[in-house]
Length: 212
Image (cartoon, rainbow, N blue to C red; front, top):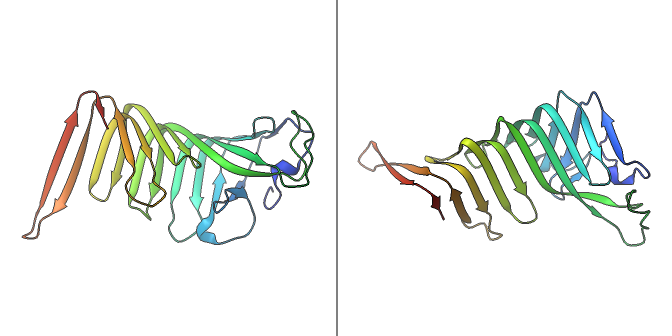
């Protein structure tokens, strides 16, 4: 079990592969491997296939029936065939660098980016009424950048809204306001509103090349 032991503390190894793997707990408050904390900030990552950690690249890879579940009441989840977690190595003051092929002693790993692939990969965020499907989903936590690709159309649904396109790029804003969206390729945006007098109205916007 990897809980509460930082992978960065295992020195001298270049690659770790486990043929059978149960789960990994991540504390998303600082995006580190942890064993305790607020359940709302903890996620459980599991898979049916091998788990590989590349120490030189600081990348954790999960294969076959990957599931990511938030342990809090929100219940947000991710299902994919493959998942790569890309970490930054944070060297604490007073620690030494043990060389290019080894991780720094006393260092910590902070999650920088996650890349999920599937047929399709599915993200369900019940806390925000969001459901997204794509063959490839990439989320850069530090840049606040979400990118989704699918030749058969990325699809994102949120509270009566639907957007489809082969590629979607979305940049989050730190103040919580609506960010910027770029859609590549022909697609559509649909929004359904409930009318005061009863019934509903759906508005649809389509484009042929790009929407920004």
